[in-house]
Image (cartoon, rainbow, N blue to C red; front, side, top):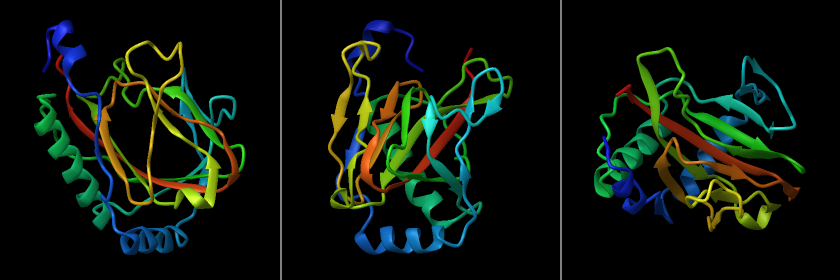
Length: 195
């Protein structure tokens, strides 16, 4: 674990694989996704609920131990090792398959909850873009570059199959989709609390 705040600012905030998933794997995952019942995405504030002022998307969950879990998990482990984040990591959570229709978005948020009462917390987030950017407009993944998103975030250029991994405490968002539909797969890798 990084204990020195100065060191934290020098470590990479994310790791990207431009061709992380092949077109064939994206097609397969979308085909499988179509067979799973989806629901409106929820957010956690003081309770779990749908709140379309914070997040407007639909989600479904890949079966436990689905093949995409192993793929995204390995990318997350590699990123954590190569970047020097030095996290003690355990198993991933169930993979979330997300769809953003026109006007869909997810405002600035973190994937971890330091007030979580469980013995583990999300430590690494891994996102794969399953749609071709020609199929939608807007829907940019933005990462906070350390300014607490007061000046916006860094647009992450993603093509179909791009995979990105970053620490789960990093603020990020998906900007509103202005046309089309955006699909992604999300993996969170948990690890023991260190505080």
